[in-house]
Image (cartoon, rainbow, N blue to C red):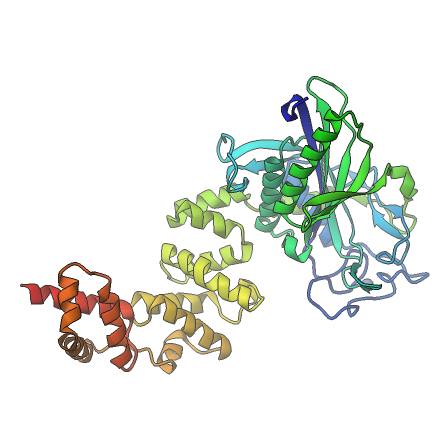
Length: 492
Ligand SMILES: [Zn+2]
């Protein structure tokens, strides 16, 4: 049989850390980037006799995720122990939810813009290609982080006990591109609603993919092959493309598939079999005797009061309210904090399109460089508005604005005009500047002739010469304008 004689069925299990101040069952600080094994206590280290206390906020946020995705929230939800023996789980069981999870059913919208750039995006109605059915969402605790070296491994229990949502899809996806768009759409929803940072590079969102093939027309699903802990959307897509091809080739050669777990090696570009047949009963699930069931009614009411807008609605609003082009709106929706900072900066009086442009191109690269976020930066939206005003007034160029930003970062509390002044950027005295322009043109008659005969690029070279001579440094845009004006009067 050929590849298209089989029907592909894909299911995704996404683990997503809930953004909370503290862990799921103790008051240890949750979060990324602390010294290893500093945010730990007897409860999250699994010491005998230590008892768990529920993090109500994590439950409320999980319910909010369910409500946003159209899940049903059962009146009562309970906690179960999933038993397994491994150094990343010192209690030898994970507190999770088996048969009464917090959210049941629902669907994840596949946004048109969430499909990979090089794929053929299917037709969408109102921005949504289709909705992929969810099985359920449950809440559990994350395991500790293991790092393996040659001959030994290190374990960091800081991550152990972090609230972790598991969002389980129905077997309702059919192509690797859909799986990619599912992950991207889900990530944007979590970011937009401020439920999780969902940064896959930091492991705040991870995914297990499973895929099976069956001959077209067959009712029963084929044997399911699972690949665990995939840490990027593009890796999930690559793993699925590989697996579909591998299974097709084996089925064509008469090799039956066996339900199994494989490890996806992204560097190698292939999957390697790890273990076969693993079922829920292997984990000896049982109800957790330390935690009483949760009655959800009050938490549902509270979550309903804080329903945030979904990514597609936010994207449309950014385009309508601020006149942003579609690409800028899409980029801002993908970074919740940058988007909030954008709106606050515009409210502080900055022009919207220029602000979006500057934030996407300059500010976000500075934030990445400094490994921080817009909310944690030592500058306020009012500061950003002041920097953009300097560009608007022609005092600094866009590149120079980046230097002003750097100066204010180093000297917190400095106002933008003071920073520009300290760096030697002043509103040019156009009289003095014109004298330099005239002198430069006179000294470079040959270049002036060449510009007149059509070599427009040389204007930049002349601008450079003026920039070198002028002190304080003027805005290069202004210099170019002066040169062009002068050349025009010379022609008359
Ligand atoms: Zn703890």
